[in-house]
Image (cartoon, rainbow, N blue to C red; front, side, top):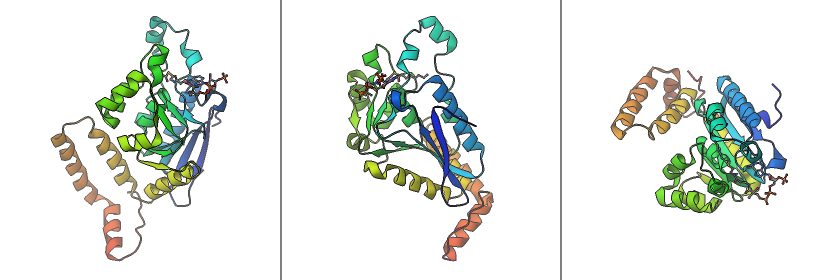
Length: 262
Ligand code: CO8
C-alpha cells in the first residue's frame, strides 16, 4: 500500500512489533485532510489485523502533531453540503475501531481536530514542545470530532470550558498536570520513549492488552457496577488462556514469560 499523506513503518525487535504511523503533510502542519484521514484509517486497520503487530504509535513532526482539520477544504461548505456529505466525519472515527493500543506521540501543535485525534488515542506521550488547544471558536465553528466531550473527561469541566471558550493553548506541562497526557519528555526523546512504551506493551499477552483497552474505555460509558462486573467476567475468562499459565508459571520459575498471545 502506498500512501501520500502518512508514512508507515514497522519498528521493534521482539516477536510482536510496533506499527509506526507518521502524519506527513509538513507544509500544512499536518492538517487532517480527507485523504490523510482515509490513509490513516487504512493503515490503522491494517496494523490492527496484523498478528505480528502488538501496538501502534501515531506521531507527527517536530513542529506539529496536527494543526486541525483542513481549513481550506471546509471553508466552502454549507449546512446542507456538510449534512449530506457527513462533512469529513466518515473517516474520523476509524481509529476507534482499533482494538490494539494506539499511543499518540505529540510534539508541537495538536490543535482542533489534531487535539481530538490525539485524545482518541489510548494515551498521549508529549514532548516538552507540545501545545494542545481547541481553537475552533476562532473560526466561527465548534469542535466536531469529540472535543467538547473528551476534553472535559480528560481535564475536567473548568479547564475544558476555559480552553474551548477562550481558544487558549495548553503547554505540555499544564496538559500533564491536568491529566490530558500521561508523561512529558524532552523533545529529542519523544520517539525513543513512545517506542519503548510500545515495546513494553508488545511483550505482554495480546489478549490482556486488548481487554485492558476495552475495559478502560468501558469506564467512560458504563456505570461503575456494570464496568466492574464486566471486568470480573474477563478476569475469570483469562484463566482459560495459555498465557495465564505461562505468566504465572514464569513468575514462580523466576524467568521471563514467553507469551503466545492465546
Ligand atoms: N488547515 C490547513 N492548513 C493549515 C492549518 C489547518 N488547520 N493550520 C495551519 N495551516 C497551514 C497555514 O495555512 C500555513 O500555510 P501557508 O504556509 O501556505 O500559508 C502553514 O500551515 C503554516 O501555518 P502558519 O504560517 O499559520 O504557522 P504559524 O507558526 O504562524 O502558526 C498555528 C501555527 C498556530 C498552528 C496556525 O497555523 C493556526 O492557528 N492554524 C489553525 C489551527 C486551527 O484553527 N485548527 C482548527 C481547525 S478546525 C478543526 O480542526 C475542526 C475539526 C473537526 C473534525 C470533524 C470530524 C467529523
